[in-house]
Length: 373
Image (cartoon, rainbow, N blue to C red; front, top):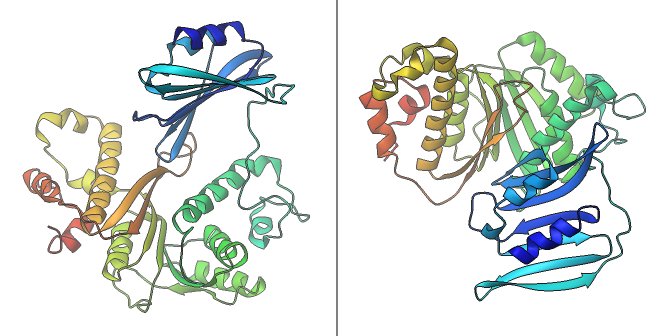
């Protein structure tokens, strides 16, 4: 390790990046590189944790506080050579190879290869004001553009190996449906899937407007229906994906229940306004301090609600990821529940014990408790 730090210390002005990889720690990979911020050189630390990436900017001397010894492979890329260390037989073995890098990029933001690219003819992005009429990104809407691509990336990641050229998607509480239109465009134009997409919402005027837009764009297999997911008869043939973005309170539970009941392969849900537990939770024993202040109780209840939903899905044979959908600086309602049907089921007896112990009422649990182990 001394040799590694010696090389880093001597090459401060020549380092292009440092990559730490091959580890059993929670942080699977770390990339360190110089960036220019407010005319000062800082060092950006990019940490990969599960499906998420976190960034911090530090001073050069703080690099030496990073736990390099947690990683079996260390690459120091400088102007002119790559210095690689691989840990074998209780020591790091060094290998040096030349490279052709002559300059260091100090850009703080790396160019990202988005799925929906600037310049594409995506009518709804023009309608939304994200693209200009000549399909350029409106600068003030760049955050919205990134959010749209984040949504599509979350979908793309789970359907990479989708085996069919047809797909039926139900979108519950679709609202103005901008992301529904984007999803339809992605499936039909990007993935070349013959998609049948149906959006449901309680607002008749919204449904009428969305159907008019679908006709305007000639999206012939995209339709919108006025319906209540908790009680109305809905599409019940082969369903491949259920999407539920910001369905309010228990509407999310009814959407998840419908997906589970129809053995849907893919579920993508971003819950909203989780009031139910917040309204009925009264006593959680030694954690009652979380219930004293309204804002803490509200956030705890929302996290508790989504934890229950995720655990139920796991119990019923889904592989579940919880992802940050929208940056927390934009909204606290930023957790995406992404689930893929698998054969593995998880015992949820502990969940049942907690719910009974604290007399918690949660709709999805009530709808499915007879099916849970």
